[in-house]
Structure formats: C-alpha cells, structure tokens
Image (cartoon, rainbow, N blue to C red):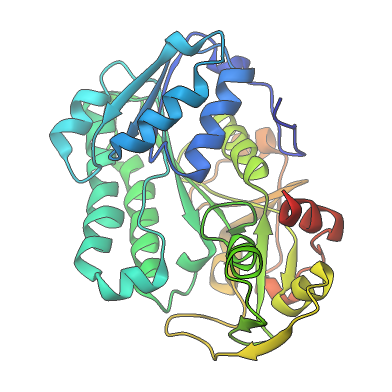
Length: 339
C-alpha cells in the first residue's frame, strides 16, 4: 500500500472518468498509475509512452491489482500528433509528464529537447482541444524559472503553451494548468540514486560534488503525485501550482547520510545554478499563498480565490532554495537512501 502524504486528496472526482498519463512509464508516471489503481474508481486509465519494454515490465508489475482491466497501454510519442489524437478520444483528464529532463542531454541534443518538450506540449494541447478533454495539467520544474539551460527554457516554453491554451478553448470546456516543483528525491537519475550507485556499485572512495554551497528544493515522489492529483481536482485553468516543499544543501545531504568519504569538487556544470527558484520576484505580483502551496495566475477572479482559500503574497516575494524556511527531514532522506 502506498503511503498518503500531506497533499493527498479525495479522488471521488475521478469516479467513472477516463484519465491518460503521458510519459506514464517514467518514475512519476509509474507512481501515479499505482496510486490511481489503489485509490481511484476510474472507468479507464490510459498509459501513454514510447517504450514497449517499460510497458511490458509495468504490465507484469500491475497485474496484482483487482482493477487491472481498466488499464489501456498505448505505445506512442508526444511528437506524433496523429497518435495523440487517437489516444485522447473520450479522455476526460490528461496528466502530461512526458519530457526530456536531463540537462546535459538537452544541451547536446537541442533539437530533440525542443521537439519533445515544446512541440510535444503543443501537440498535447491541440489533441486535447480537438477531443474536448476537460482538464489537462502538465508537470513543470523549478528550472523553468529564470532558466539558464535549454531544459529549463524548453519547460518555460511548455508552461507558456499550456497557459495560453486556455485562450483557445472556446466552447470546448477544456482547461489547462501547470504544476511546478523541485528535484524528486526518490526518482531515477536523482542525486540520491547517483550516490547509491557510486557507493554500493562502483565502490568509489570520493564523492563528487559540483559546489558545496549548492542548494535545491526536494520533494518525495509520492508527494509529487498527490500534489498533482490535488491540483487536477482544484484547477480552474491558467494557474501554476507550486507546493511548499523543503530545501537542503548538497553538503547537508552528505553529512546526514554519514558517508565518511572524501569530497571531490568537480565544479559547476554548464547550465547549473547554485540555488533554484520556484517563484521569482517578477511573478510575485500575481502569486497567492495557501496553506501548503502557492499559486500563480494573471487572471484570477475573486470567486476562484475564495474557493482556493489563498491570499496575495507581498510584492518582491521570491521562493528560492537557499532562503527556504522548510528543511528536508533527515529521517526521510536516510529512509530513501537505504531503500
């Protein structure tokens, strides 16, 4: 049984609905599919991804669930508009998680990054509009705020595409919103998984770090899934939802894990920042604060603000990892590292 997090919400709003997840065989997508099989009463749950092997592995893993028969496995790529059009037929909700996410890979393969993250986003929007999908939410990243690398820039462009889609919906009753958060602690490719590989598999004697001052926002995978499902329920269109999540420096992570290894400084890589930003000062003019999240939108109505129970943040407010009052729990970090 997957644990419930502080962002967990009642999923009755999904009763007898059809939901599709792009990039569904990735770390986030896999966690979301399992959560939905356990807690939602969906009519259909569509897995859309381009990797047939990962889909085969997922099928074997999910056969244990009693409602396995609601799953539909679609091989497809968000670059392929025709395939999206076919997959999105009679779909009520779409969670768009497909993306190229590695900073170094994006820098070396810019055309591929743009084709997937930007043009793929456009294809998702158009297929959603043509099929009158009711709600579409995309997973973004802190690197889309004041971006200095192509991955961040491509996700900023993707965010803009999704928000602008609300202007083109017309009478189709489709709405589009964005969820933005930081690094996922327990995902493939995270710094925790890298450390585990280096220590337990490669038996290294020195831990490589880019800069000891570096800080990041951190979120557990299940927290990310629950937050997206909560935002999908509450979205009105044209919002960027940002969860209140902890930060920790790379050196504090190493100290907490008590690795007892020497540090090897390798320098900041191209496209990296010392600290990440989830809300910039420029965004503060249209940012509102709730109990456990922030929401940014340029078109809020008072009725929506009242519904979300949020209040305006001060001008020049910013949400940056090195000034965050929420600190990552040592217990959580150690538990994830040891699993």
